[in-house]
Length: 117
Image 1 (cartoon, rainbow, N blue to C red):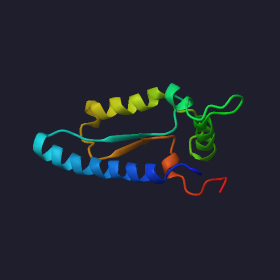
Image 2: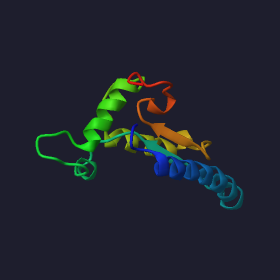
Image 3: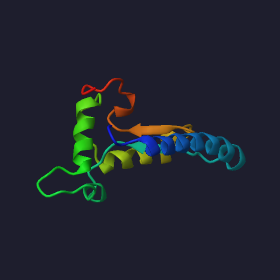
């Protein structure tokens, strides 16, 4: 996404690395699971306040449009979708899952070449 990424990409890569390291260390020592959820663009109240210009789309609205145009699943993403992923990870259904980054982004992370590129 043009103008969005550099520092964020580095921070996310470090978070994913830390997730794997902590999953191993905490799993062996305390028998706990460590996972990360990487959510796609959500139109939250906080996100909607960024780049708000009268009569124009907000920054998050542009990002959501981009996501819908490029992700395999072109649908809205809601906070409940992210919450349901967390419920899965914290339930017995996810009891053997540790050290993963679960992408809840309609598949945007799997995108190859963007259609507008």
